[in-house]
Image 1 (tube, helix red, strand yellow):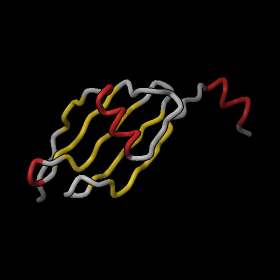
Image 2 (image 1 turned 30 degrees about the vertical axis):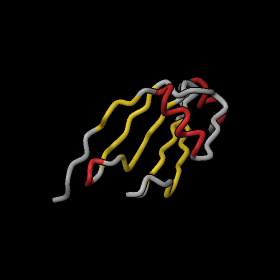
Image 3 (image 1 turned 180 degrees about the vertical axis):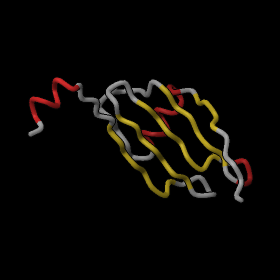
Length: 88
């Protein structure tokens, strides 16, 4: 079984600059929550930022600290009444 990473809370204000350096410019400004995961060698390998408008950005880092990939997710919430209006 592999190593288990622990979630480490990060300062959203400081992480906003790192996210911008990675080429990610969310329209909602600064994240409301940010956390990261360390890999072997105690370096951060993944940073996750959640925004107030439902977006979540995940940045994967190489061992040297450069960005290997980014992922954007949007959480959509629909009530039952809204679903009845749009779904057949």
